[in-house]
Each structure stands twice: as C-alpha cells, then as structure tokens.
Length: 233
Ligand code: HEC
Ligand code: HEC
Image (cartoon, rainbow, N blue to C red; front, side, top):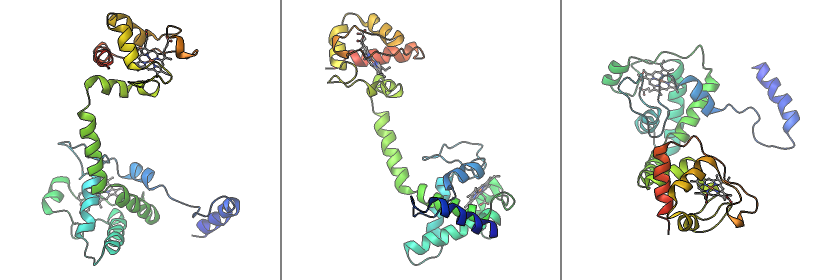
C-alpha cells in the first residue's frame, strides 16, 4: 500500500501538468487476455468449440448483471463487478450463477488468488462489463452479415487493402477500377501480372506513384479479384 501511494505520488509529480486522469490505471483488456484467455474465449461473437474449458466471456458478462439482485442498472453493474472480483479469487459452486450442468461440464473455476490481485480483478471486471455487451454482439453480427454478403472479389480487395489506393469510380493514388476495367477488358492476364508483380509508369496520371507487388496473393484470390475489377462500371 505504501509503495502504491509512493508511486502515485511520484508519477503524479511528473505528469500532473499534461493529464488530470488518475495516473495508475490498470489495463483491464491486457489483464483479461493475460489471466482469463487460457480458459474463457474472448471473441465477440465467441468462437464455439466442443472442447472449451469454460463458458465464453461474452456469455458470462451478459448474464451476470441480469442475475444479481439489484434494483436499478447502476446497482446491477456495481454488484456484478463485486461478484466477479470475489469469484475470481474465491470461486465456489454455492456462489456460482451458472447452472449445475455447466459446473458439471466444465468443473469449478480454480481460484486465481495467487496470480490476480483484488485491484487487477476489479480492472478486469470493469473492462469485462464494458466490452462484453449485448450491443457489441449485435453490432459485430451485423458487420459480419454485411461482410459475408460482399462479392468474393471485393473481400479479396479488402483483405489486401487495395482500396487504400484505389476507388471503383474515381482516381485516387491509383487509377479507378472503372478505368482499369476499360483498359484491360481484353488483357486480363496482363492485368493479373501487374497485380502480382506491381506496375509503374504505365498510367500517365499516377505522378510517379507505383503499384506495389502482391506476390503473396493466391491464384484463386487473384482470379476472383480480377473478375470483380473487370466487372466495374
Ligand atoms: C483455468 C481455467 C480458468 C481461468 C484461467 C479462468 N476461469 Fe473463469 N471459469 C472457469 C470455469 C471452468 C468456469 C465455469 C464453472 C464456474 O462457474 O466456476 C468459470 C466461470 C467463471 C465465471 C462465472 C461464475 C458464475 O457461475 O457465474 C466468471 C465470472 C469467471 N469465470 C471469471 C473469470 C475471469 C475474470 C478470469 C480471468 C481473471 C477467469 N475467469 C479465468 C475457468 C477459468
Ligand atoms: C500503395 C498504393 C497501391 C495499392 C495498395 C494498390 N495499388 Fe494498384 N495501382 C497503384 C498505382 C499508383 C497504379 C498505377 C501504376 C502505373 O502507373 O503503372 C496502380 C495500378 C493498378 C492496376 C493497373 C495495372 C496495369 O498494368 O494497368 C491494377 C489492375 C491495380 N493497380 C490493382 C490493384 C489491386 C488489385 C490492389 C490490391 C491487391 C492494388 N492495386 C493495390 C497503387 C496501388
């Protein structure tokens, strides 16, 4: 405790002029990755697997605030945080909110008392309830559905960041895909080669900018990408 006070005094002394925020801030995200990821899946949406060791973090985080007894939202949140801080260091079947089946399936969570301090557990819990929410799940699912609906060739263009230099309908750093499609309607193989090997000085308006090579692109991806570019209009 003394050391902590001393540290905050020293750090405050150095940083007081450029920042009013509390100086010693534990990084909840990093701590969660460090101490929880070996058993709890941290993705949103979770990556479900048959041999998972514990319920996904999202499932825990969405359920606990609904299960604690509290009269309003802010009390729910603080009780949920309190529960996690305690459970991480002192788990028991009696305290657990998850049903008997889950405890049977996964076994009881081991205590992390030796590796996680109370302050760290609090930082983790705060991060957990802020990040792992129903709203984030809904948003991510929507993004994923939008991405899945894209044309296969456009997915490849996004994967290799082609759109950082190209737009479909206007020149930016590189020529528009519409202009490229016009030029290469009958020279698809030549165009593929340019993507793979790069190109320079064949477009007069590129002002010395060059097309980098994408040697790592697979033949399959290159075909999908080229089909998509040539269909631009
Ligand atoms: C060694 C594996 C393991 C690690 C590491 C682990 N957990 Fe768990 N955790 C489990 C298992 C198994 C369960 C399900 C059984 C239970 O509830 O005890 C669980 C359940 C939980 C629950 C739900 C309790 C309930 O029933 O409502 C919370 C909250 C939780 N873990 C938080 C954490 C946090 C936060 C971390 C990281 C600091 C963490 N766990 C690290 C294995 C682990
Ligand atoms: C760093 C910017 C940059 C990136 C990233 C980039 N390009 Fe280009 N691209 C250019 C420039 C500049 C040109 C014009 C080069 C020239 O004058 O020969 C060009 C030209 C092209 C051409 C026409 C080549 C020819 O022979 O006529 C194609 C096709 C093309 N890019 C496709 C792509 C694809 C597909 C990707 C992603 C895999 C991509 N580009 C990523 C900058 C870029």
